Image (cartoon, rainbow, N blue to C red):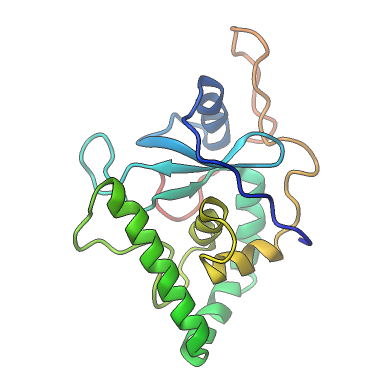
Length: 192
């Protein structure tokens, strides 16, 4: 994509946001703390999840990509070997490896500001490999450009997923009978 979606402020989730999440992933959210980024269509596309789920289970994926259109496009990148290529570059490019380690430290710092998870890794394979582009892109969208170099790279490879319309259709009245335009499947990484 020529221009990444603009950074948006972190906001408290509204009832409409929770409904959008339900349609995007096909279930209610667990451990939802905030909307970390909004798609240019206006719907949430990255949520911030509590480091521990309500039952106390540690959940290291602080930023979770919810948009099924973005998730599908990222799945295509993963299927085309982008993660392996990025991991290989980490072993040969010391500057990239240092920037990716800084992204890992940023992720851990943000999570630990909410609740420290001693002994738990960050997410997405950071700091030594690339395990899940969904997490890296979510981190890039939530933190803004320049924080996660491989998340930024993956984001730049994506099409403008919002251009063909929103991924969900929210009800206009209280009946809530309107189905989602596109049922969502969760990415491979942990799910809130």
